[in-house]
Image (tube, rainbow, N blue to C red; front, side, top):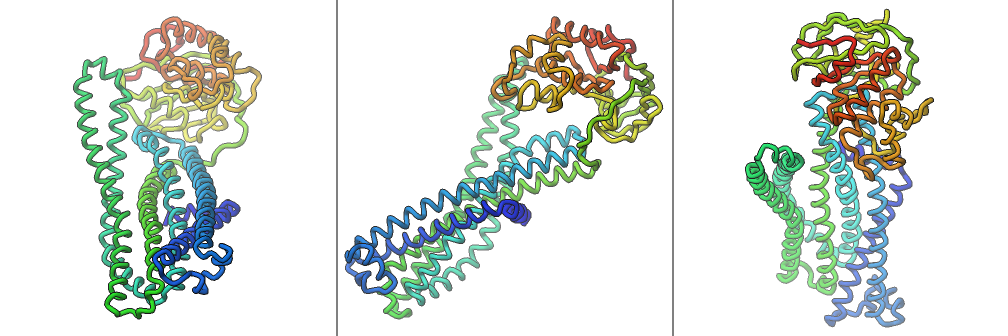
Length: 546
């Protein structure tokens, strides 16, 4: 129901596209029914049955052919095929637009929830990595599930009307037969549907593991473990093949069940006619009735296939919703739209701070404005967690953080609440220009080129130009760090929090970066988390977490 509800919201938001979708679907359905009627009457005429011109329902067809019934039927059939084609294109296009807008809205909703939660620990980071595929599954579920169900139902309705017009008794008998078999198949179909969803989730998990193994091929080479990883991947491949085979088999079984059901129902109805249970007068419409009934197989099959796609989409929507709900329960705050606060130069003081993660002793430190501090310590001690606590992304288990006389410990997140600009170790890059990445859409006194020149990377600006980063221009780890530091400088916030800012830089580039940071002494307060000895040389204070 959640998927239907989101689809309904998307339809209400774009009634113009919804109207086009319904009109296109009706055109497709009407064309399908007319095509069935044309094929049936044409077959009956060619078989020597009653001339279509003698039947009131097709009297107009004779006039279309200029008195030639067969020509009239052929013309109507061609027009029906064209109507079905045009309607199919219109409904598919509008359905794709609606599902795309729904997916875009879901993606933005997830992002807003993440901003509101303001927290992304390692466990949730793994969950969030799958959100893109979940959103794609939801989009596909709306386009090929919900809207495909709508089209299938609309195609069945005029066929039902046609069957009733052609032979009411035959149609009633077919309905009875279909109802009896549908009750039997329903239980089996539900069980198969659950198995399908389980197998789909297993396939997704295996695919992620396989991608992980391939993505780190260079690492396995350094361990000399190529043969071991190849063997591992071959084993995964065999498991994935078996899982995919089960998925396809179950999908084919569910898809074919409706066709088999319809075929058996038709056999039963014709058997009743043959045995004389149904009035023999129905025989005059037997051929067109059978063909129209046969044409119902396709929308019945599409209806089942659409339900399978929708089932997977509902699973994906649930997974995405659960992830963002966990984000919402961690911390709720409005998305900031007000301009950043102008912070006056003050001393930064940490009094007995103990972070939520890590096992370090309480940290007490006072940094005068413009000082440089280096944080070092063994892996896992809590160096990065200390930066996250300063930023408000993680809560402090103990202690307090002060900016001058202001207590920041329980403040929110962002430049209006805290005076910190963060450069994480894995610096993200937007699929946009260098200027947009550095300035984040804000116009400042300095350009991106000036800021990069300030930290010794003027050549990078010339190299990147106006290219769209991460898509048309691949960015190395070192270039990411240069851009991230320039981005932090562009904020004009008084404190820079740098997490391993030289980890991807070669020795010459590292010297340039450290010299640039040292030149900021007296202008910005800098806290550098590092495991390297070189950054310690520029620090006024070295804090070793123990």
